[in-house]
Figure 1 (tube, chains in turn yellow, green):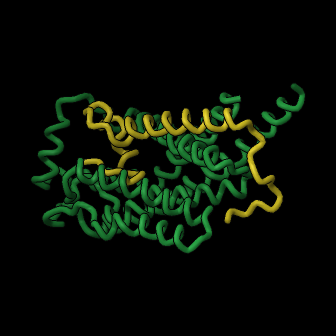
Figure 2: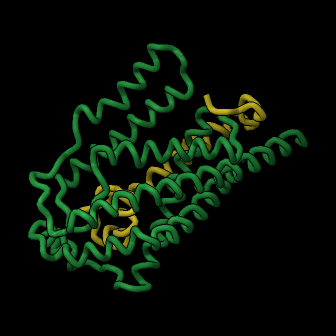
Length: 60
Length: 230
């Protein structure tokens, strides 16, 4: 279990805010990762080339 | 408020991405540039390069560094948002300390697990089919994340066995491998690159996790104070 001695058991955020944030952050984060590290378009590949190698995403 | 938490994630991701750019200039980027000198000698990579030759590419020097910087910021924000999504979904309060644990988890999920099957590649090195490797990478990341989260949050034997199965399965199935490892890139360079990327990625994930934990704890406290004041 994560060490949470001094932390409350749950986030002090309403359930609706929490879930809406999770969905938005998950979708937006996945989309950014796709374009930066996976999309095959030449322009994206060439611009992000060194980052793809550095974060060890399959590149060539 | 949605935006306060998302802003915290953006700030952590941008700072960690900027840090990554600085960290990569020490060893990762010089090794990529050194490998490119050999890349043109390899027949396989030559084809790969010809495909991209006609499209725009940043010219070597400051322009290439600038685009790598921007890409690192985007990737930093992407990973920060994904960690934030998991923290929100699992309703886990965070601090800088627990943020470091989330960062270590991200490192295990996004670096260690896929690297076990697909070791870091330098330009010009032999590798299996790109799309097959991308699919394997994505599946491994998703299954390792699910497995680790089960380990962290479910303590029954049945759940833990399921988590273990998820983590092990992609490696039993096996990553797409090249037909031959023959490459114009010297093995010593490849070995250096493995250590350079792993150490650099570990630092990136710890910085990202620590910053995200710190910023998120401030953002959620501010959110709570707003809620109490009506």
